[in-house]
Amino acid sequence: MDDVTRRTLLHGAGTSLAAAGFIQEAMARVAAFGPDDPYDLVVRGGEVIDPSQNLRGRRDIGIRNATIAAVEREIPPQRGTQTLDAAGQLVLPGLIDFHAHVLHGGGIGLSGDELVPYTGTTTYVSAGDAGVGSFSAFKHAVIAQSRTRILAFLHISSIGLSGFPVGEMLNIDHARVDAAAKMLAENPDVLLGMKVRETLDVVGQNGLEPLKRAIAAAERSGVEGARVMCHIGNAPGDLSALLDLLRPGDVLTHSYSGAGNNTVVNGRVLDAALAAKRRGVLIDVGHGGGSFDYTVCEAALQQGFTPDIISSDVHAVSVNTPGKPFLPWVMSKFLNLGVPLEHVVAMATINPATAIGRVPRLGTLQVGAPADLSIVEMVEGPVDFVDTRQNQRKGERYIKPVQTVKAGRPFGRPYPQPFAWP
Image (cartoon, rainbow, N blue to C red):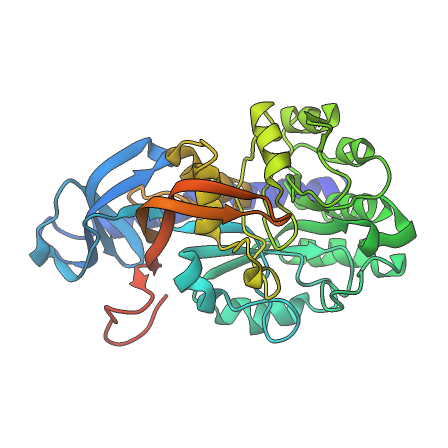
């Protein structure tokens, strides 16, 4: 057995055993308490929507030891050491933003924790903020310090996005396959795969070579299921040729961009885009400050080129644009495009959680799952939306974040004593 195959086998077995162990341990923590023992926190009176269980209805949620311990029609108030009143609000599994920029301290990245009041998000996936030259610092100085969970795609460019707005792939020498593969292999707990930006002003004359190197690094790492997230904007050359390179499980982000070379041409979705979706390429929104065009998206939805994941592409530039790409606002745009609420919630909870594949029961409110919740209000009434090309649409409701709970601890009141969090 060669090295890559052996490493893949051992990593896959280790991941399965770790997941089984986590679930067994979580269930043991739940079972260790009696029927009258208190919960650390009870979230009461909300309408729970959990697509992973096909659950929608009024429920109380009991949390103990950073884990969902009970989901019941009613939990007596005295059972909660602390309580949150969610009456009249929706209680969702903690929102997961699969495309964000949270390497803060310079550049375009923002603090995930600081974003919480606007995003209601409990888990962020950094979309290529760091390359091999900066990932270790990102992991130890930012990810380890964050209350919000952060996972990441490693940029195939060794400089990551540190040079923004100058294209990080104008010099192909930054795309160091062996170094990226080694970094990915050594950090499978945090890294999901490779990120590449295939836009003319980013890659210059290098065409699809950065994407080919990102795929090579993912495969050479030997990490089972390592994905490539490919950004498209004004993509170089024939977009169909790019789409044909993507493998099942890879991620196409900015899928409804209006920036030049689009998945929709003259009102028709490219055959290669539909073929990519059929073979299992994940379709990600990645709204951002320049990557969501209503005219592209509407045609795509009508022709079956639907998203698997709704994400924001939140960063210091995009959040100041009229499109307001905070995750609940992007979800609201799809809700007002006619996507059912349960599907919208799934595309920001269980779908990205499944794609992450690192945290057992992430994206659910099942007993034994991590106690991550997003409490939101459905605000009814006329609302105006705008995309990144200044196209406007009218809506009738939007999702407003109210309270966020990560690992059983609300951001803000009520504060635990002692003030700590897992």
